[in-house]
Image (cartoon, rainbow, N blue to C red; front, side, top):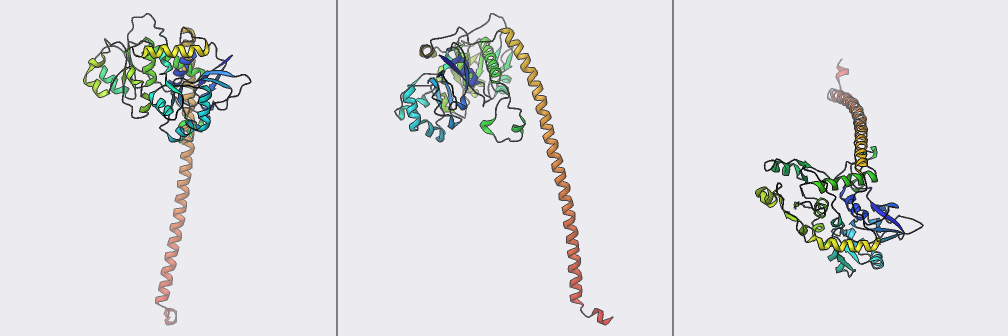
Length: 386
């Protein structure tokens, strides 16, 4: 049997790669990567098994997936708050797909409610990242990780409460540095990371290692909170989201949760020097997920990591080097485009100035002609008198 792993070439959010790393634990090998936004185009002479967890859909054309994929529909979230997505997911073609490969394991209760409302066989599975297994290392170094849209504010607050190192971690990679993206800023979901697929998985694996060995994690990112929970790292979820609240239904209750305002008023909610242990409600969900996915592939790894320490160190150095080179090239392109545009603007300004002078000259001639004609009209016998 061949096995595929979902890749995300279109997005800069490494939370997607973290979800695929969770799935990677359960496949004995990776025969191919299947692009999330092109799963309908996948072709292969032999059918490929794939764990289809994660978010759907940003590309409406990608549903339903290729017939060459044998899927396990688990830990899925459908963005049904968007009418066009809801129409695709609840179409007759989609319902036939669910009927063939269901029941559908839903990552959140919102997705479950939408499917059950239309009599689609579904159940609440929870998120597959809850199956990640800790690889904590023995060390005396303690640190706090903050991954939030309001990291600066949180870190400033924590610095008044602790002497522990506090690190700002980001799960978003830089946007593509290709010239075509520089020239078209209105691309929305077409914007991509300039990292290759394998490089993004390496960076995501490094993120998990950071969460795994942290003293505690404070975050408003779902795919920082749930992995930290699974890795047995104390985590506080700051629920400050104004977008995609339906994604959190059935998830936020698994972790210790508060608002930023409440936390800033009471550090005892989550004392980073003596962080409280995580709730244990997720363990039953984790157990059911492992059982379900292992029965699909017959495999489970001892570790979420596939890169050795040496590989990570070397690859990170190469990534930093390539990032520097590509950033330098990117800035060169930016400067070139700005310079070209500046020259065009200056040329247009000179042309406008020239045209303006021509217009002013013509207006002056017209005024002189009008004045001359008016004088002649007012003095028609002037020449006769002379």
